[in-house]
Length: 262
Image (tube, rainbow, N blue to C red; front, side, top):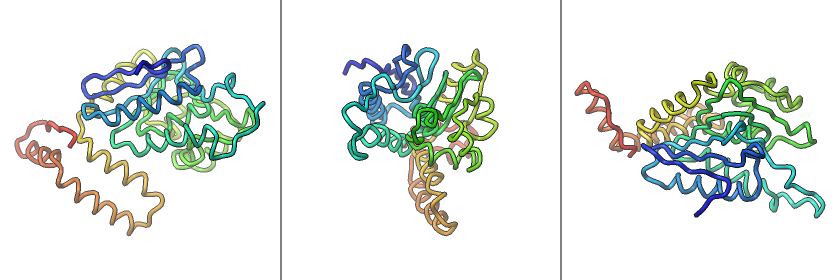
């Protein structure tokens, strides 16, 4: 399949999805929605891919919905017929539930749904010059693409309210300081840092990482007793994995483990 708005790269266990509408700061139109969903599914099913990276071409990561292609002249679709139900919500769910680590490499502005696309990923690394903007209130909308779920969990209620009601931009250093993202790095070190991060994740025990993601994501809805039960059950499956056996052997033999992700 030839992609118009997505570039796909695959190397050494790392699958990269590059949003490729730089003239529109990689904002979403229908083609980008469809192609990103398809490309993410393809890399998710590829047994050679151990980590998925989402980044942007040019000076922007993703500026959210392309408003130049949005129109209300034909009427507002019902909730179950609109773009949130058809595109954004399935994408966010697929990222959150991916059996592989998903990295957002935020190379520039991440606004609106573009910001929340980044925050849905497991690890967010951003250039110092990148900005995160919950811009919905500036055009009379409600934060979507999971923003109202993720922000309070990442930064707390008070910060989430300020970010969403004021719609002000914050830079990557501030985003790191308040716990919104994993790491802010200097622009000239960004590519090397992203590569090193992804190489490390690609060499980790992929199945165990998937179990870890599941446990962390469900912790907020569980009591301690429920979470202990989940940990017990997930650990049972991890104990039966090849990577656990390899990890123990490597520890005994005092050598680096060579995980295969299974």
